[in-house]
Image (cartoon, rainbow, N blue to C red; front, side, top):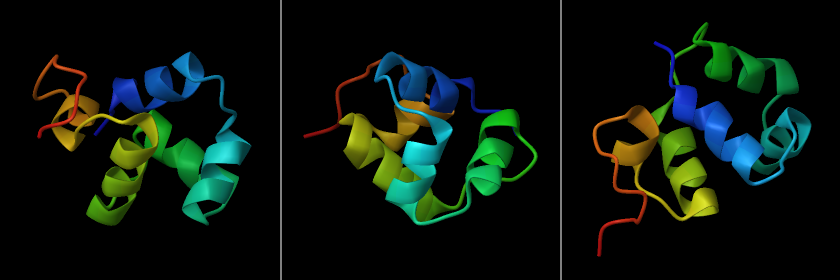
Length: 71
């Protein structure tokens, strides 16, 4: 499944794939596979990304257009 917002958030925050992969403690190729939809993103990775970008998992996966995280 392709989550376009994963790439958009990374680019909007001026991160490289390598930087995000290091933050997640995974290989850059694995992260790239998340962005292009070759691999499903595990929940623990979605949580880390949501915290990094100060947003919700729902926003990342396209269930809401509200960028602010839930209270």
